Image 1 (cartoon, rainbow, N blue to C red):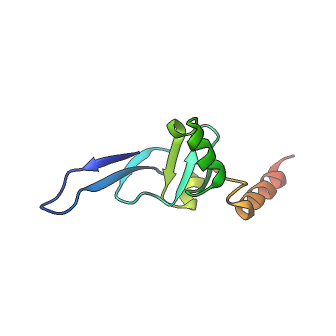
Image 2 (image 1 turned 90 degrees about the horizontal axis):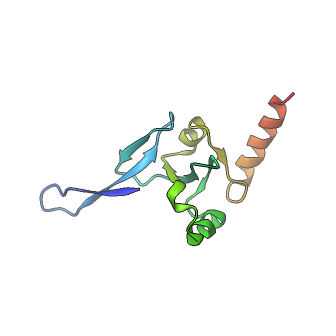
Image 3 (image 1 turned 60 degrees about the horizontal axis):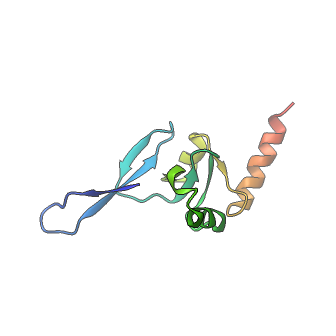
Length: 102
């Protein structure tokens, strides 16, 4: 998700991070992003989410991990909030989904 960036002058190396945009396409950023997500399940959450961290340790999550600059970008890209680390946002998402179903 990160790629080294060539140093400018004698300063420290800066890293580029691959984030996902509102249209779901990856782009490079100097910022690491504020939220993580899973490409297959289309769920986003905090970077310190206990559920995501357990999955990362298990090794099954990392290849599908994506990063977002903010919540609005994650939602616009078609991801839903994590029920574990974002319970309030998840409850709102769930209620809105129920309201739109016939």
